Amino acid sequence: MQNRNQSHIRNLVEGGMSRRQFVNACGLGIVGMGAATLLAGCGGSGSGSDSSSSGSSSSSSSKGAKEYILVKKGKLIGVSDMSYPPLESIPDGSTKPEGFEIDMMDALAAKLNLEMEWLPATKFDTIIPLIKQGGKADVGVSAFTITDDRKKEINFTKPYLNSNQGLVNRKADGKVSEDDLNAKDKQIAVQSGTTGESWVKENLPKATCVPLDDAIQAMTGVQSGLYNAAVLDLPVASYLCTKSYTDLQVDIQIATGEQYGIVVSKKNTKLLKDLNSAIDAIKKDGTMDTLQKKWFGTTL
Image (tube, rainbow, N blue to C red):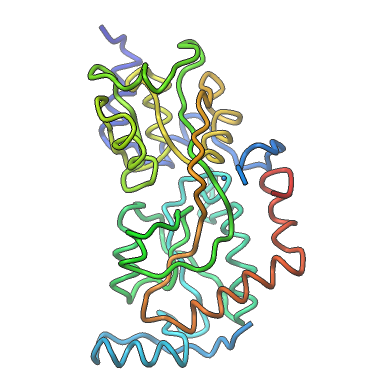
């Protein structure tokens, strides 16, 4: 039988506890991390114009090949779920996002002579449809793994970071194996729409895969004993186990060889091309190394 604390956490997690509610409860902070094993090896013109819902898809694509199709002139509007420290999150008591991806996008926007601006935090699995639809954001940046299925809907920039997956459980439970978890009585938490969810469904088919809104809910559920384990991106899993969930551990590192890319509409071909050039530029001028040292404690 669950104790009162366990029942309370169950209500919070299943009731959709937000990242900000969690932060208020446990004081999650964003600081640099000095673990070299966090990640496993895991300027064009800014003269954009306002987007319009009128006109055919072909005319929009033609326009996007010649100039940026932007929601706001002079701005690069980004969308993220803002719940994946140290990549992107919103610290307690603030409305300003911060993290590796936030700083990276500021640097990339500057190369395009644009000013970076962010929408409010958005559910991860709604971001690609939002970019595909257009009209609200120009880019999606939320540790998106480049996959063939996703490329059917949108374009990705060239990779800017490598990652693997991490399986997290309670330290008190000791070492577990994939065979231990691949059982009907096991529940594995994931963030909905992620490659972690795909991995669990493919590799732990007998277990119950539990999709949640964000990584914080997954980690909190494992901590409370509600779920047996969680699978999420290794850099985020390692960071959270070190900074906030010290009673949890990354028990299994899953070599998936993933790469993160920025999500761009298929119509926005010039923006995609110039973002790729900007990624090359910040790697060449040392900005990428500087940001990696700031947020991960080392170059990767």
